[in-house]
Length: 156
Image 1 (cartoon, rainbow, N blue to C red):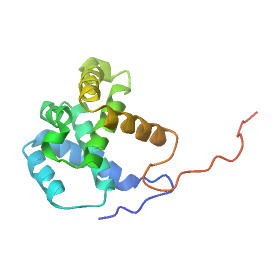
Image 2 (cartoon, one colour; image 1 turned 180 degrees about the vertical axis):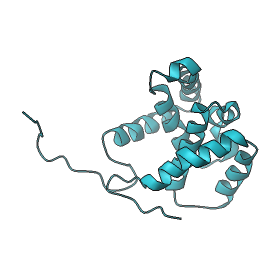
Image 3 (tube, rainbow, N blue to C red; image 1 turned 120 degrees about the horizontal axis):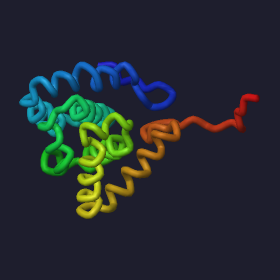
């Protein structure tokens, strides 16, 4: 599997695969989710795969997968790895701050409610997830080297 990172720490081809084909497969056959989670729990894979798994579930929710929501609502229940759970929180944060079109499907309000519950249960992971999301938004992956800002680049 190609997980070689680009400068931003993202393997875009892998990301597109998870957010596209894998998310559609999750939507069409949600019974594969427990099998995939079981595999992730048994096999210590590179931590970056966790990021893409949660992106796939997030994309499946955007496609209308109600079954995927339960895994975000109780991420500790399925895999007890703290890093794995952290990526669930991060993806929820992206869902909460998603596009205006997501308002119609009520994804944003659902994500906000779940985040509030998770923050109350595990405030430390919530704060770590906020930091991770900020790193991602600012251009660093949190998994590797970050871009160095070289002056201001204003175009006149």
